[in-house]
Amino acid sequence: DLYVRLVGEAVEEFKSGAPLEPVADIRVELPVDAHLPHDYIAGERLRLEAYRRIAEAPDDAAIEAVREELVDRYGALPVAVENLLSVATFRVHARRAGLTDVTLQGTLVRFGPVDLPESGVLRMQRLYPKTLFKPAVRTMLVPRPMTARVGGRPVLDVALLAWCREVVDALLEGLPRPTAAPPVELKESL
Image (cartoon, rainbow, N blue to C red; front, top):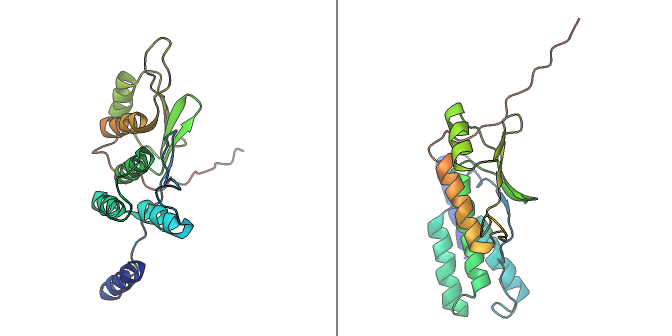
């Protein structure tokens, strides 16, 4: 499978005359129990290959193809594997919105890079009170959701991924994708 894919990429690169653009890397560090258990895929090499295919999936169709292959080869998916595929699906969605970083930072979830117009900042403050927007570093820090307002626990696993997707959809969908940060000009004082 890897050989066929590499040959296909080489043929596409040759036809277009330019190297294929690699899929943008995105870091998602959230408390989600997402892994391939040793009792599901026993071989280390096979597990690493499955991780690689999931991480490199460029779209939802590729993730679904990996899902079908795992079910076909190893049987029904354990919850941790379903969670892993949910993380991969979220990564694809976040990548489409132009994000490269969705991480837990204390009691906040950090989204970056984010460029919000003034109307977007107002919307953010209305939908997610206590959210911090830092335009200088192009970061949005949204308070992590809790199971209840008083005495609740932090939301985990797939529920946290679903909430993160809602934040992306509510605040970032339809906006122009962030570009590289503009250079900072330093002025000398006399």
